[in-house]
Image (tube, rainbow, N blue to C red; front, side):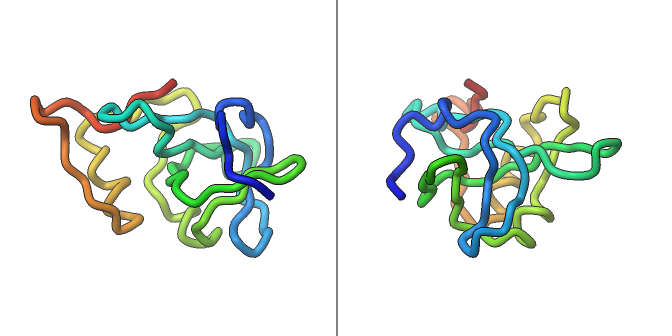
Length: 118
């Protein structure tokens, strides 16, 4: 395995946890607006009739032949904040994503959002 360079190329690939358990499929990448670097991804999870997108941090992610391996266990990811498959992340819910993974959160100096979908 190797570190994910351009994570956007991995859209549609499977996402697994550190033990190799499949979580879902990589749907979109969100960058940190302060650095324009990939920060979080959304992963499609759930039954076909009840799909949703959960947010997962990309720090420590690596790629294999046909999957993206993230640093958090499946049970933590499945309980992460989510949006509908055609939904958008409301600004008010952004801090909750960071809190779920025990990550520091601070909006930009002008109060701008930290995450932007790319």
